Picture (cartoon, each protein chain N blue to C red):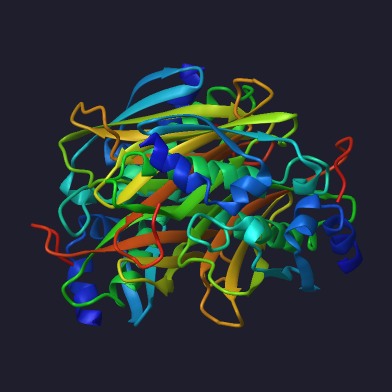
Length: 139
Length: 139
Length: 139
Length: 139
């Protein structure tokens, strides 16, 4: 399962460009790591919400993927993100976790933490879907 | 007002890195343009939802900013995004529009379109906040 | 189609208890009406967000239902609601409209207006799903 | 604090009409209980999502209220709810919990469980705001 997660993750140009790493993964939960990078800031110098959201989205997506059948691909249906404080820090830990998995839809939650803190600065609730047998859509 | 939007936009490393342009802006509505870029794809080769969400977030943020007092800075409180189809195409048009502006919170909606189509492939509903007199937070 | 919407609507105890009426419906859009009622207020005397959300949810659900095949049932996957002002007034108009319909998921938006005003006090973005051949789930 | 929560809760016509009880409350977390009731069903006979959402909204609101200063009133800015399974059962336990409290905005999450189960059938992420010195808005 972890191999499937990593293989799919490695095909995401976005994650590579952002410099994201999968630091840990288990069935239903994934941890990722993102560093501060001037290329991805917003107008006040903090990391852009979109960069943080991208990683939260990927973390939730792979958490969902980790509980899907081996022939499923995963797509994001929707997510809600609350930005509770600016993404201020040097290194961010981002988690994604399955809340409940249905036959097709998997609901996840994610959180983002800065510099080893334990108070999340962003929280996501996401709806992921399993996709089967769609040309060009694997992983 | 448009000058304030552009000045703030130009300070967003993320928008510059993604190659986003503000193509039009009026009081309460902003249009942006994003091109397909291998650096920001997801595992199936489409643009990553996070890249599209980043631009929708910025478009909604600047739509909100455009109706705020001149001394306000804008921050994203939260947003919900529905990805209704993959971001498949060469050029994407992204809009942000104010639904209702309160004293502090401004609610916006955004949509993303591919290659001149008129059927959105992504829809956002966002909550923005005006911030005043916070050190280092302008625009 | 309108007959299917009304038949399903009439089976919702919640809508009957709230005193909601379907005032108009066309393919992809539904209008409902709700009156102020002391039984459904929040602590400040306004209609409870949950009552307004229930009607927005139903309006979006039936807008989605109106574009689904005749043998589909409709269920709500998720929705996001922004309460932009209190539900202050005597009569509320609530709309639900399809943004984009996929094979299974239908994305809708809804708005709530008080006393004939044209500025929404609540806005919803909803994900609906078509369900087929599930025992006991029709309409 | 618990007294303030109960005093405000007792003024909600909606909670009384739905027959909701506050079963427990501590700083930052509230538990409520709701019974199945034909008056609040959807078209398939399950409790309407709107009824469940109303209680989740209230549970999140009072969780937020419990960490606010004594002179604050609480209002819902927005929430996202995922309905992961129908609200099938006789008695529902609904929780609301603070994720992070800012000076004005408090972010909460809530979950709904049926008949003593430990797998949530609904999950909410909510943004609450503290309101001060607004005529007629207390609690």
